[in-house]
Image 1 (spheres, rainbow, N blue to C red):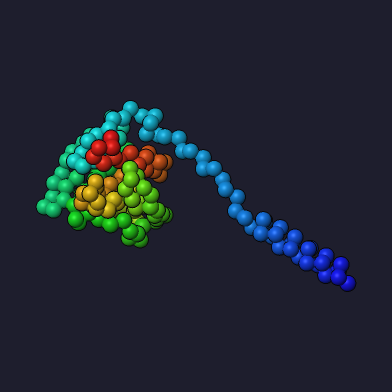
Image 2: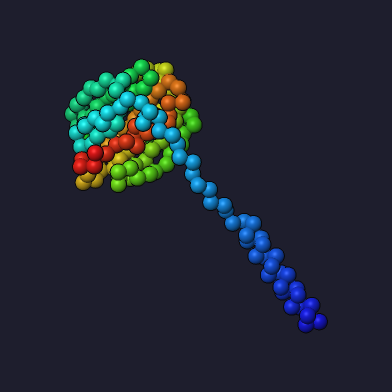
Length: 175
């Protein structure tokens, strides 16, 4: 009888440990994303308190408002804009399609990034560029006022390039 109890305890413990092992998540090494930006002719562009890598095909134009300012970068496939100031827009879902949001650290600064398809393209200056990636850096000593950078494009395949452009941002001293 004692042997039967000991065998039951041993079998129960072994079954429990195998269940735990079956439920243990397997860690997978992330596959690196090839850099679309690195494959293009591009240069680092210095703008105010930050710099960014842009393909040479982009034209550059500064703009200034009453309480904020920024840059517009455009080519045939993409419009990128930056806005820095206390009224720089937040990143949130306004009912857009395929909205995804995440946070990451870029050049030591936390940024909230969202990708989405604009729900109503008629609201855009160029309705064909309805796919967007937007990132917002909160105010900090290095960033200064909140900084928002957004990229809009007509083809969802351009999302990877837009994201890599945002990820290329560096703040003063880290170019």
